[in-house]
Image (cartoon, rainbow, N blue to C red; front, top):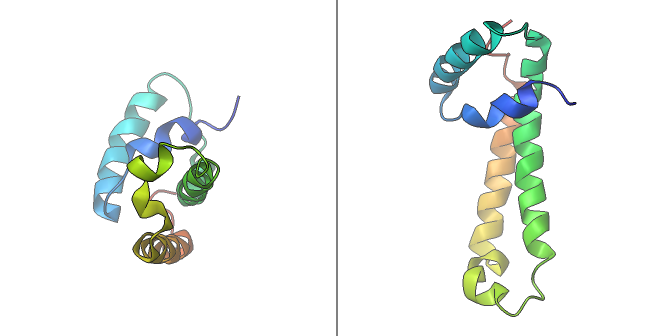
Length: 102
């Protein structure tokens, strides 16, 4: 129903070199079955960013659960939120980089 990259983007991670390598193999296999619109590659980093935000929101919705504190005590820590901010800033930089493929 959605763009094909929605199913593929989580399989590529790491450095740009690692992403390029894994995406090359994924796209080669994918394109042996059907065509892939390479414009969808622009969605990888926005989808990754959205997932990060949704995960924190998902956790925030569960803070009232009695078991939450035991399993996610780090969620309310200053360190967690500092790391999240740094990760989101990194994502902003990644979204400004040129696409891996054209």
